[in-house]
Length: 95
Image (cartoon, rainbow, N blue to C red; front, side, top):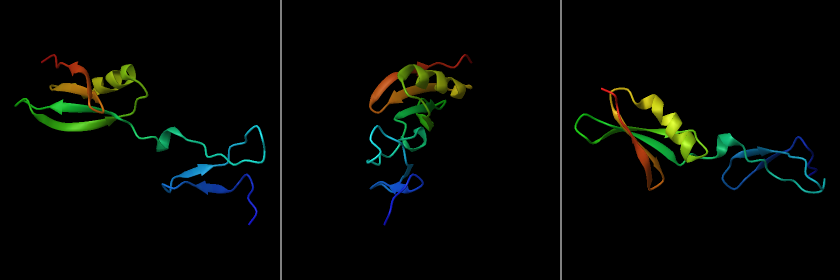
């Protein structure tokens, strides 16, 4: 089987990556795109009773971006922002 630049490479997790030209044309290297990287940031919406009501996965690459993205969910509810098991902070509702 002959591989060329249009060949799709399947990783062991069955995600698709396309040919990326490298310094040496002899090697194939999968390109990791943002769409296949899972976010570890979450916004937990706190209900009126003080318990988590819902959560949203945040599309962010750092703590500042996660906090900024979580601001959209502060709508009459407090929101806790987390990165894995690390609490970044609480965004308080103005109401």
